[in-house]
Every structure is written in structure tokens, then in C-alpha cells.
Image: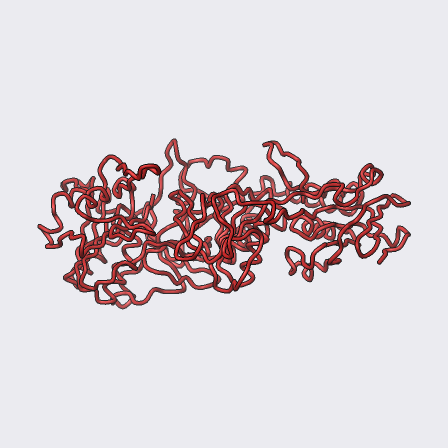
Length: 596
């Protein structure tokens, strides 16, 4: 194969490698007016095959570059395993995959059939897959798994989206917008263990619980192609027409960057049409001033948001119940599970606080996980039936700014109303469910602070709907009675179901003595006033809210000794009475969901 020897027959640009960086350069070059652009991919597929047809890309598969030399007429001669090409410029984007034989995961994990590097094995449809990595390569693997029908979580701790290639950034946003993957930008598992034959990702932080998957795939480190790897001659190197993506180049923070977009200004010096295209793009950005015009904001909303707020019911100005309906997919879930909501930093805040680093994050999303609440009664006044699979209900309080914390999401959510758009994460998850409750005559206690009662609403409805006969008690600590968004519904439940008791505990209400949930336990209030005994042989206790109320102990890894926090929490009080904290491998009757 040969492109010929004359300048008319030469390619404008040859891109070596069809990964995210190479595709980004090729597509931008074509948009900038380069008429002949060819991609040489040594394997049988590029990173995103759908882009070939969408952008009419010219790709040569199975072509490995053997040498890059100069040719007459300020051209390059690129020799591959299948022929010779002439080109005015060349960008080497292919990055060598280190692979299993050299690269090992940077965390405690043993490779197996279900824990692998860079590859999937077995059926992916309806499988739960964890991808671990923070580079373009990790995004490529995530997209591949999602396209194969898997439910995907990308643990991308350390990822900075602006350092991905343009194609990588677009793909990441698409995966989130279409709810095809859950992106954990700040989380990386500390270790991968095994639970009943399946990989268990242990994150070791309160933001992300331990999660079980069918498969775990690590996106390996990738070494950039060096000049010697493609036979670059001294003459070709000196020509100033060959660029390598991913070579160790540092930005102002001293971190490695992938110069997929940064190479375009260099190419523009050779191609006037590309230079004009880039200048026009820059001028359009300047006309938008700070990039925050209404049109730009609307485009960001279209790109990032994937759900609609269907109802927004304020309990008072700082406390709301809202419904969210996604554009794609259902939202089937178990009572007690959680989902994530997000809004753009570009949205207005209800307060005067300033987000730290807003200039760098202005076009990004701020996300937070919230336990899913539930309607108590339907529109006819009957107990709400099966969980709706088309929308979710959330119970959210406005978080005020403090000197140590500037909340990003709720001050923006406070300004939203029905019909407004929002981001809804793709994965409904969580182990805080009614699974352990198997005795319909057993006692079920729900302890919460503030909006921590949200998951308990769903659980209570589920128990009553299924005819649970044992005592059900819900105790909620709040500042004032006005902070109870569901109190009227729970009072109605009490009138209808003699086995259900609702105990609101306002701590700052005039005329009402201050009592905490711990006080009710130590003073045996549940048994004295309601006839409900806290018997560890028949009782399950669910706790959600302020960690000080729950009081989880810390375990010394060497000795196994437990240290409880001060002040005394519910866990310490009840373990002294024979209750057992529920862990994945040690089943107990004290269940907790941290909601702080």
C-alpha cells in the first residue's frame, strides 16, 4: 500500500493509534478543514468504533508503524507493516498497554477470573462491573462494559476530567447523562476481597460503602510510545512535523497531562484552515464573556442533566420533599436504598456564599447521595402501594454555609421548582434494607435524626403494606416540630395501625423537654410508655442520621479492640444489652446508614 510520491497524493495528517487521544486529534483536524486524515491502528478496533461512521474516519486496522522518516517536499514517509504513507504531519497517539505481566494493581487485590487487568471475561449483560482507574483508558473500558449491557461503576479517584482527551470528556459526560455508569470521582477501593465467591470492593470511607460486584477490572498504567518505538529518524524528529501524545510533559501543577488538544495549535501552524477554525472557536468563547451566558448555561444543562423535578413540596423554606423522574431507565429499588442527585456549579445559589475554586469548577456538576424516601399515602388516601419505578422521592434539608464548609448542592436545589432539570445518578444502591427482617411478628425500631428518616418512610410503608404484625416504632430527633415534613402522615398511620408508633423528639421546641433517642433507651421509655421491649432476640434496630446518635465504634486492626465515641451513641448502649452490630460478614440486629 502506498499513498504515492507526490504532494497531491500525500495525507494531511496521519495519526498513529485509535485511542481516545488519537481519535480526538483526528476528529478536530477534520473539523478544522484537513481533507485527508488517516488513523493507523495496530489492533483490530479503535477505542470508540461508533465514531468511525459518525465522523467518516479513515482507519487502517492491523497496521503497526515500523519507521517515520523524511521525504522530499517537506513531507514524512511513514512505513507500516502493510505499506508506505506520505504525510505532511504525524501525531503518534498510540500508548502501549503495559498489561498483566508487568503492571499490578496499586491496591491490595489478587487477580483471578473475576478480578482482571484491562480485560473482561464471561457474560457482561446484567452484570455489576467495577472499573478502577482515572485515565482515558478507564473511560474506554467503562464505555465498553456499558455498551455490552453491564451495570458499571467507575472508581475514578484522582481523575481530573479536564486532563482527559476531548473524546474522553465527552464520553464521560454521556455515560452520566444517559445513566449508563456511576462515576465515583473521589473514591478508590483500598482493597478487593472476596465474599461468597464474588469480588468485594472495600472503600474504607463514609462516602462509599463496601460494594459487591460480579467483576472488577483495573485500567492499567499505560506507557506512552517513544520515538524509538516507531523508528523515528533524526531527520524526521528535526522536521517539527511529528508529535507524541502522552510523553512526560508537566502542567503548572507538575502533573502528567495528555496533550490531545494541546497539539492542535502546533498543527495549526502548518494548516491555515485549522488555524482559522481554532481562532473562530476562541473568538466565540470570548464573545460569551466569562462563558456564563444564558445560552451557554442552557447547553450545559442539556449536556449534563438527565432527569426532571416532578414535584417540589416545601415543609418550610429550608426543608423539602421532591420527586425526580429520569429521562432514561426505571428507578426500581428496595426500601432504604439511596441514589445521587447533582446540579451544575453554574446554577445560582440561594445564599451569598462563594464556592471555593468556582472558576475551575464552574462547568462541572456537584453531586451528593441521598436516601430515597417514599410517599406514605396515594392520591386516594390509601397506603401507598408498590414502589414507583418511574420516579423517586427525596427528603432534603438546606445545608447552611459555615467557615469550614461551603455546601454546593442544597443552596442551588433550594431555587428549583417542578419542571426544572437535574442530574440523577444511574445506580440505586445500598445495603440498608429490610432484608434482615424475616419474622412478621418481630419488633422493628427506626431511629433517625432530621432527614435521616427518609429511608425509614419507605421501610415503614413496605412493612405495613405487607401486613407486618409486630411493633413498629419510628423515633426522630429534630430541632423543632416544624422540621418534621411527614409528621401528619405518620400521625395518620398511628390512627390506622395500632402496632405503629411515631415519636418526634424536638430538642429546641419551647415548652417541650429536650430528649434524645439515647435517653429513650436508657430510661426504658419504649417499654414503659408503649409496651415495646428492646429484646435482642426479637428486635431489629435501624439507625440513620447524625453519626453522634449512631455512635459507631472504631476497631483496632491489631487487637480487635473496640473504642466507642463520646458522647455515648445508640450502638454502645444496645450492644451492652446483647445486640450485635450488623456487618457484611457478621450478621447482626443493629443496622446503620450514615447520613451526614
